[in-house]
Image (tube, rainbow, N blue to C red; front, top):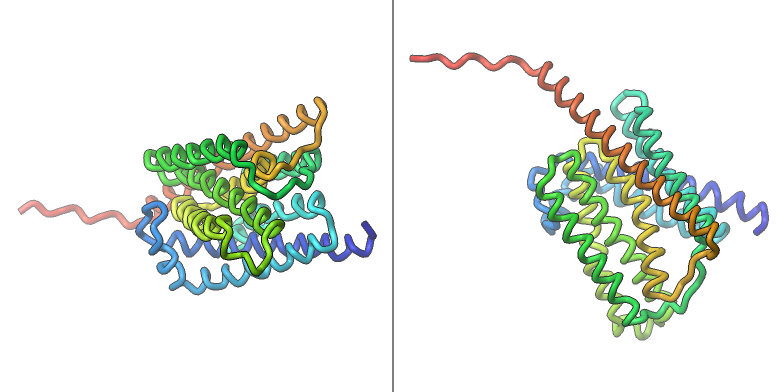
Length: 305
């Protein structure tokens, strides 16, 4: 790995993170303007496309993806992925700038804990290349477990208040995005263009990816700040993708007892970071609602006649 390669790959990864952060902020703003908040409603995409900010978010997401590809061309995944997760900090920065407020220290602390945990996990785990072919018997247990996780998340979301409801929606989104990444890896590694339409992975991606995107917007709809959704998806997506790569595609992680202990502590740090973000976001949302109630004009007393 040459210094000149890093001189291109690192700035490209940071620029991609900024693009993803701004795209997330714009999508959150558009999603909050919609009124129908049923989960996985396909019509939500048509509602969102009416907003200019959502249209720009799609452009920015495309630019971010292109920059990510460029970064991976010149720098290894172990360097690029930790830089990409700084998109959460960019999101917080754009949100604070738009609201003319300082970035909340509690949100930054939670985001940093989650991002450091993920970065350490990725650096220690260093997933290796597998066969990229699905192993049927090994794939089934994790597949069923992920289905259960999504169903439980949707059930929990239906019983929570809006601000906390964003968390289970975001976890379900991370599952869909991580599975999509594993399916695409398998597809690109084993399929030629001439046989592309004969492989089931393509049709699975066509179903799973839009479902994940819809749940992403559901998470944005119900979270007044969006930081919980962005952080949870950012750290959860690669974790699910790595797990799917190990269980489904024959990939392996960096071994040894010391590595395993560090990986466990890194996962715990991520979980604590997301918990801090969730708690702080709920507190800020409550403050926003209280200020809005104080600023609202008093209702006129109803006349008794």
